Length: 160
Image (cartoon, rainbow, N blue to C red):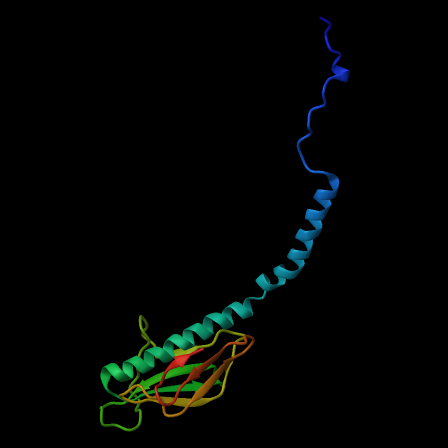
């Protein structure tokens, strides 16, 4: 028996990537990075989305408070000061909101202020009666995002 020369033995399969595969992956990662990265560094969109969710929850809270306390709850949307303020009628028979504040849950304040760079429109007042109905249908637009918040007049339903 003769010993085999290592030069002529079966070649082992190389394990790894070819240069073309590596270049293709680098190009694809570069394209994805160029498209996705700017979205992560624009914090105004994240702030606007968070504020929109907070406004939606606050409006729903105002409607539920009106039903639970059987009183008129007023939501003042002031786009000039970028504030949303809640007040409640003193008595169940009152037809207008007084100066009595309705504090937000887990807060000692009755107002919600938009973060810097975020605004909303229009300036209006939405009143929820004891049945949870709104005084008028309203559409609230938050700047820099495409989502709108709607309040239905007949039912007081608040949705996006």
